[in-house]
Amino acid sequence: MAFPVKQPNPQKSSRYIQTLWSISVIFLLLPTMISLAARLHWTFDLLTSFHVQYALGLLPIACLLLVKKHWVKGGILLVGLSYNLFLILPVYFPAVQSTTSGHSLRLMVTNVWSSNRQHEKLLHLIREESPDLVLALEVNDAWMRALRELTDEYPYQQNFARPDNFGIVLFSKYSFEESEILELGDRRLPSVFGKIVLKDGATVSLIGTHPLPPKGRAADFRNQQLSEVANFAANQSGHVVLCGDLNVTPWSPHWDNLLKQSKLKDSRQGFGIQPSWPAGNRLLRIPIDHVLVSDQIKVNNRRIGPRIGSDHLPVIVDLGIPAERKF
Image (cartoon, rainbow, N blue to C red; front, top):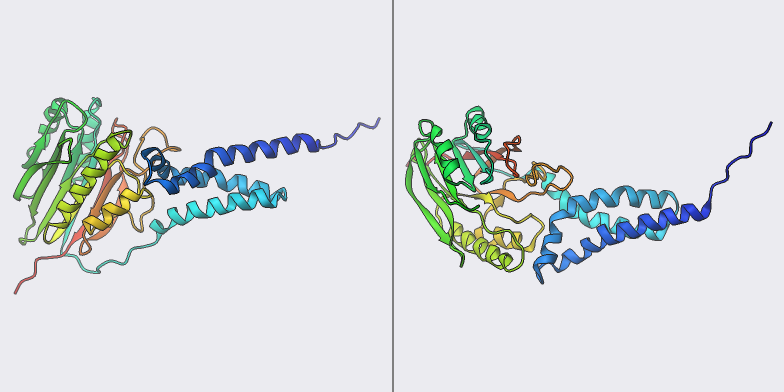
């Protein structure tokens, strides 16, 4: 008995291709294009956060359309993919850095999440990694009580605990030449400054900050705080580190402003995207926790730490600080 051969349904295939095309245009290509107008409105600026996701979505659909010989549709998506890759890939190229450094300094930056009660996870990670400096954000009174266990290892502290999401604390194994809590921007949210003295007398100025998320009017407050902290960093002499949950991704025009105003470089260069938020969603994760350093500082390693119960992942950076010159 001969069985009938099922013939492909061109109409069904055409509908499938059209559906994929519509999805890619609406959710991937159009946001990519609108993100070019990021300076005009905060909603457009938010779209700059997801270039990795746009690229991951455009790649398979563009390839499928080209395989199916939909040259125009596939070519258009390929242009969008190329633009996203143009923004993403440069951070994977190694940075040109100084070949010498006098001191190795490990820094951990962690937004602990004020409602997180898994204090022991962070304490365990700190003891395991033994960073020289710890910047913790969203620190409230409950977190400060838990973090007091670190006093022996980190005798030098500058802290400002708050009941909201903007408490901040800096722990150091090295003494401070000076330290203070800064209030920057119209919202006067606390940032922390510490001029840290290393063993041979060399100093590093560290500024930690946490601006508001860029939504509605808060976007203007974020941009203002980033501008003020950048100017503060630019006015420091010697080696400078600016770090924190900056609530901005590296594809926002306000990130470009931050780098130019602060005269600092991105520690991610050569180490990749390293997204840190939201901790519980790999697909949507974006890089908003940052460490910027002055040109003389060498970035020996940079990585994302494990989950600690927070909605952010810690950032751990190994820095090489030039030794103090002796005359």
